[in-house]
Amino acid sequence: MSNEHVAVNADSDLQPSHIAIDYGNPAIFKLTWLVLDDINVDLISVIVTVVSFASIFTSYVSSIKAILIAAAIIVPLRTFYPRPTDPQGLVLLTGGSSGIGAELAYFFATRGHDLVLVGRNEEQLAIVKRNIEEKFNQNVHIIASDLSLPGAAKQLYENVTGNDFEVSILVNNAGLGAAGDTLEQPIEIAERMTTLNCITVVQLSQLFGRDMAHRGKGWILQVSSIGGWMASPHHNIYHATKHFVRAFSESLSLELRAYPGVVNTQIMPGPTHTQWPTRADAEETVMFGMPGGTNDPKQVALAAYEGLRNRKRMVYSSWGDAASALFMQLAPRSVHLTLAALANSPTRGWARMREPEKDQRKRGEKLEGN
Image (cartoon, rainbow, N blue to C red; front, side, top):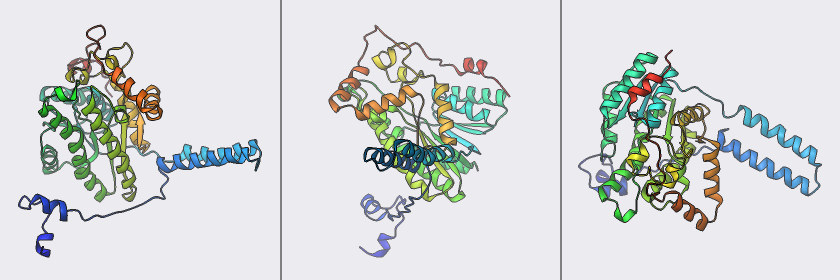
């Protein structure tokens, strides 16, 4: 093949797909390891702890001295690193018409951010916009878009940049789920689920992340799920997409070490009291139907923001969610799969999640302005 063909832009519509695959990747690696981020702080803490215990058991040093030395190293590191930085600038938030997305929008507005809200429900987006402008005096632009459609992420990017919006904070919150057996779910639902939960997340992170890297500053928040640690019968495809988001986001956080000033954080909420379970036909499952088993979306929004400003790679919305995730990682696979299947089993009406708040007008009445 000639060099002329090899040099064809990978994004060209005229380029055959096999050429885009075979010759479209420049394979650029920008490896950076010596950074005091939360990953290396955790690594150093583990190494120091292990060495201290080993020293005690081998009688190399006294237990008191080993503990004091370990504390002298670990406490300052965990206290001062990574250094918090308050996010600044315009927020682009997907799935902003309800639930966690709307609560994040309100939370960013209380911190003085203007927003671009994206979602399918234009009516509810407009109400969120009005709530923010009336209560917090921030500017809000809304875009009605179905990001589960192929090519929607690129269209959104072109729309936003074409209107001269400079996005400093990207929040990938929009998500689609569906309960039930995999073989019984419509192919179209599975396709839209994987497109929205995976492809759209990657493309928006790439497109807006490149702009942030060029400016040397930016924040990306991925709204994932503790389902990213679970192989889950009856929620198979959804949880598989969250496995993808978790792995993608964790690796992206390491890659962004090479782009100082750009932060990537993922929030891992557990079951949350939003419209998502009702839309996914999961409100009558053990996980969502049990009393007190769901998070408040305001709590999730607060944890997400604090994780972002503290430059964390991954944060959980509660200690219970963190414990559940740890258990799923440590439990034997037979136990893991059995419990996950039971948690997502239908209750057949004997337990049901109480109806979440649908109308943002009511939420607006409870907001406190500046």
